[in-house]
Image 1 (cartoon, rainbow over the protein chains, first blue to last red):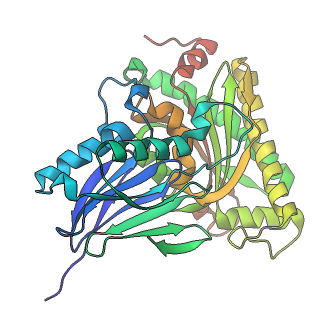
Image 2 (cartoon, chains in turn blue, brown):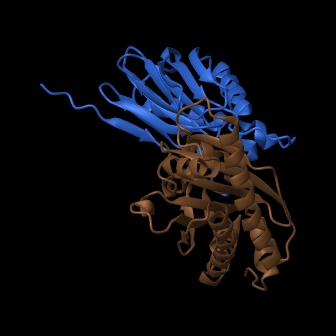
Length: 165
Length: 212
């Protein structure tokens, strides 16, 4: 039997879920953080492409939950629950949070990458989801793809090759 | 922020004119710097989602040479000058007379990086001073930063400020390419000007158009 694998794509400030044999990918993470929540036994994973640390920054009329660390992660947990996942089995891997440009400025937005990473970690801690691996910081963009069947997160960086964590 | 709903075709025309004047000056500067003919497309002004914004520059995965600067003053926002790798290689090889220079093969020579930074400086400087003269608004750019990376990683940085108030972005997009070179239509450079939402009011007011 031929198994066709599909790649589920996640845009910026977006989230989605993939089940074995499919994989899930998000492209061009800079200061944004890609958060993978997965259950290695059910072989299912959710990916959130977080853009900002805290929903208190939100000034739009309707809120896009996936945009913020503190709303995106709970929303993903809820979505995985609907797929029959028990939250205590979830594990996390994260990547991104780079500092793309160095400026001599005190503007807080320029530290957005590290702030996103801190906010994601705080939120994972709050929901008691263990962080298994991370590839964060630096000053390069990343494209990440998670394979729920192996639990490996594949990370591609320009001019620095490919790694699995 | 209701500003996006109130923008009409007149406002879009005003923004197009800004793209036109800015990029025309920048293209002229580029042309005299390289001693080459540079062709410029009619500017596009679009209100797009963040994902579509990435696609305008070739998709989030696409690796490009980018010059980024923040602008402050009467108008604030982000400005990008994005070049496909092969086009920036061609420009810099021509400028520093070194045919081996390649942005995809680090470590990059100091002189090549410096030449690209200077190119970015001159182009963004001419774009913004033309814009400032036209609107009589004070515009203070930061020192341009150079990077070679994925479009998604670069552009999302310029969207941070904006993403707090909107899920859409108004982008003033002007494409340029070398004239008389076969295939050069496919290796376009782009100027993207992304004004912060609160800046549209000052831009329109300066040109005698008001928002309803």
